[in-house]
Image 1 (cartoon, helix red, strand yellow):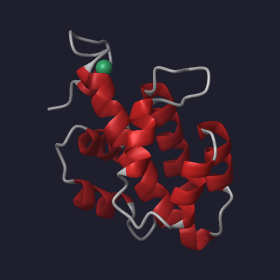
Image 2: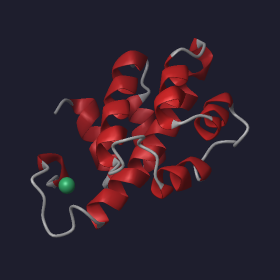
Image 3: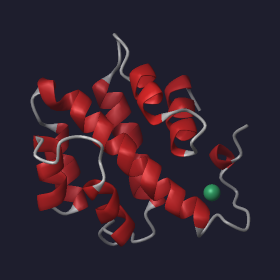
Image 4: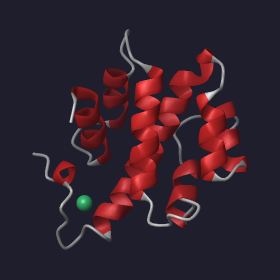
Length: 132
Ligand SMILES: [Zn+2]
């Protein structure tokens, strides 16, 4: 797990404050493609519905993203199924990138928390769920 992945998991597990963690991830030389791809994988892995990756928790996460609900990234997440939404998010203009990362980080925090409270509750082999 690299430094950014560690930060993402600590944010998801409430070991780093969301906004502080976001600030650490979006530093001056952050790599959008890399962060996007990591969060994309993390989110899809954390959702039990593998056919379409849609779930009540996923929808709840979108509706509680701490940004204005009219931002393009959120509109896309609301309007399209997860696979199509992620495809569209990846190709938005650069000035949307930080908002997109904020959305995905928030969604992962919610879907991973749900997973830790259900599937992972009685122990799991996920080494990233064993952080100090
Ligand atoms: Zn786990």
